Length: 94
Image 1 (tube, rainbow, N blue to C red):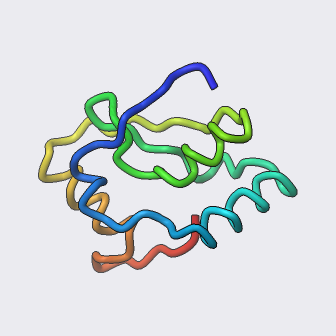
Image 2 (image 1 turned 180 degrees about the horizontal axis):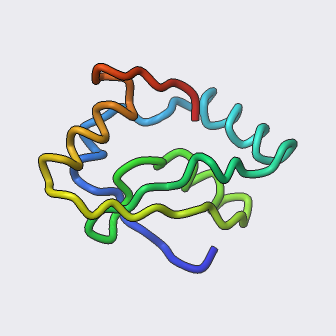
């Protein structure tokens, strides 16, 4: 994996995958490959969404797809709420 990224402070407000979730994600990526439709999202050069995907990919030596969010801090907070299932739109999984 070429780049190393810190976690954004906004992302740190949300619970990280537990050990079982991380293992399931690792098994899935190992068996099926990385799902390019689920990019790791960066904001201000740090990981806004996809911390678990990023860590598992780093462990496996897989380069994840990257999306860069360029909105405001308020918009970034709203995006993370939705992606973590706390907004109007619910999204689950990895």
